[in-house]
Image (tube, rainbow, N blue to C red):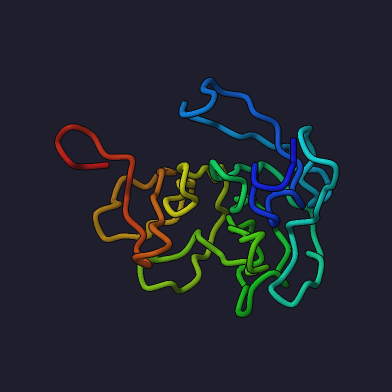
Length: 173
């Protein structure tokens, strides 16, 4: 449950459901469903809308396909809404990460320099920390992506880096 000391206060605003193994001292994996931008599941007594800008303005378009960090602090989701971050003018779905502790929403489906991509991005998944986020796009976000098909990219939020993750044993896409 969402008792004091079991989860950080910010996590208790997000309903989460444990879907993986582990117990005390074991690994934990959390899952959530996103309906209308609200994280829905079981485990806590409240739900919160996550498809909002840092100023708290709700997304103007739908959101879906969410993933949570292990502690539930970070929620990764896709949305077509252009008002979640400044400068979103690509008229395409993007992948975002919402920090439920600070209220900050960032776009993670971006070029390595942080500039916006032009095409559709989807399938956001996060590691346990909420720092490393995988997403899929047809855009060639790095020079090595020359295959002309959609690929998987990894965005390291802390490092501010985007790299091609779908490469073969030979190092090519």
